[in-house]
Length: 117
Image 1 (cartoon, rainbow, N blue to C red):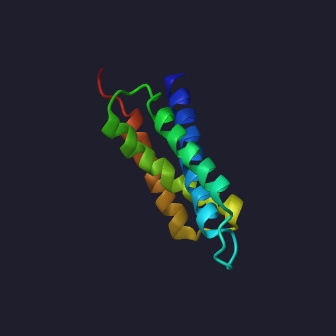
Image 2: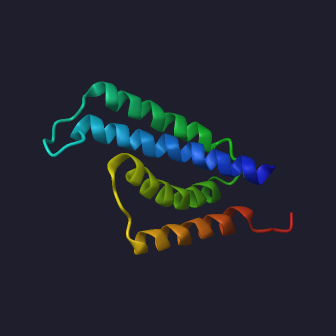
Image 3: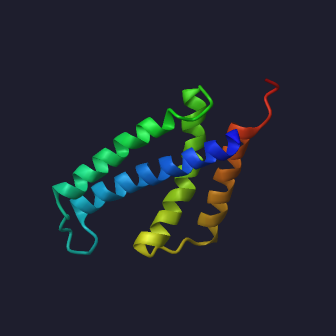
């Protein structure tokens, strides 16, 4: 169960960080070509989500900050592409997909390889 919990925490962290960054982006730049941002409420929501991400990362069972953040980087890559697909209509090409798979394989090695504990 620790691996399932860890994966769930990575997913939650990705939603908070990517979502928070997206909200700030929308607040400053907006969703269209006009360059008009959606305002401070969006920016504030983004800042709150980014702060919550920082707390969620501390809930990982592994106590090594560097390991957690390195592994999360791979989750962030794949999650960002997925976010863009769902909310912005982005269509990744095969290199995006292969890169995301490589990143997630790296996450698995970093986080879940047996270390003889």
